[in-house]
Image (cartoon, rainbow, N blue to C red; front, side, top):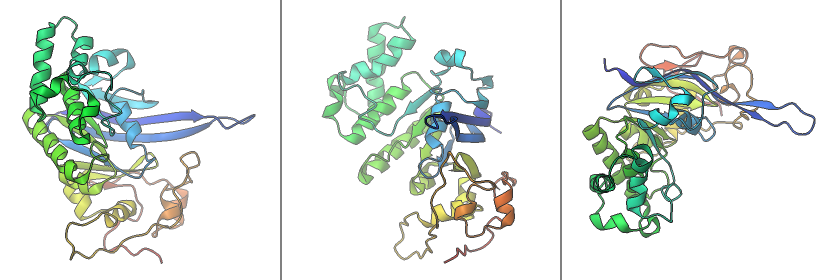
Length: 325
């Protein structure tokens, strides 16, 4: 079995939110205990609705935010805030908005050389420029792009530049936070193909954050489905997509567009509103919206259970869904 590059146990991130005048602050549990491993050359996708904790997880793995609790290791070494400056070279992040992540006042060459200037100050400028030009070619851009500004590029080209910048320090892990959701559909496939080629060539490990299951189906090796900060299902992509065990996963998959017009799919419409992360109900967080809910679900929090494929449900799916009307 391939040794994990990134390993997390009980990873949590809580925020104190002001309750207002004369009120005690409340705790927002953005990530409430997450376990996972990620190996070289593999992609772990994290999916879920907005507000489920995906981006918070991305920031913790990228060492932008410190976990409230739990352990995170990189190549078997604990990730501690005092070591972030050195460890960040091995973990880089690509953000959702390629234009917002690039300095509009810098030329592309300067943007690409900046990570080397900061982290490898002894490297000669000619060597930094050579590396930057090689990286431009690697992501499919032309030599004349080196001296242009970000506003002169399309969205897909800007994301290629963002990917090139993330690779300048030869990282082992790329955190991809919705890397194609801001792009046109015609461009998304080109960027996903580029990421696949780079992963095969450089043996990169990807943490892929997305809400689009049709994208995840094509890029992931393993999947974690999150709901209100918790993992409700995890396992190999094939198992999760072909036989989802948690009702929430089944509902998400039923809403995913199909490339086959003749394919018939019963859409599961969840009733009720998503609970506030500041006021998560007792028991299973999904209970207020679940068509299979029973008294036990409202009293106890189910833990992830299973062998290869795990789900946090007392009454996992075994057959066709039957949501209440």
